[in-house]
Length: 170
Image (cartoon, rainbow, N blue to C red; front, side, top):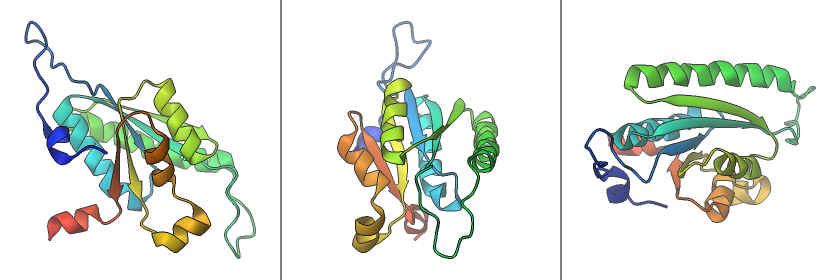
């Protein structure tokens, strides 16, 4: 993980002074696009803006996820994809307003492996994702995508806790 001083460092000027040269050109934001992913999304926009980087939003539809207790039907993948694409398009619009270039991908598969594969395929320089903060019991039962990505990524990973904004406001 990167520390705040490294993230906030001003990149050196490129030769000719016209463009900033930064080792971070593409930031991959891995998100389920839910309200709880807001702190990670805000952090990704902030870092991308400061570094002059492109923000690639990746949302993975976990097709192997079991139904929740009491659920009669699993959601259809095409419906989930449509909702995620609409939410991701809102982030593209936010990027336009904030001066951050944003694109998005909606993938299907196992989230941890899919995030790592997307980072490799899209030549990302950093991954930012949120942590649901389920605690040790939740991680034991459900696993932790953020923990998996942080342990297996070959590039820097920033994990933003779900309550990061609440802590910053205090």
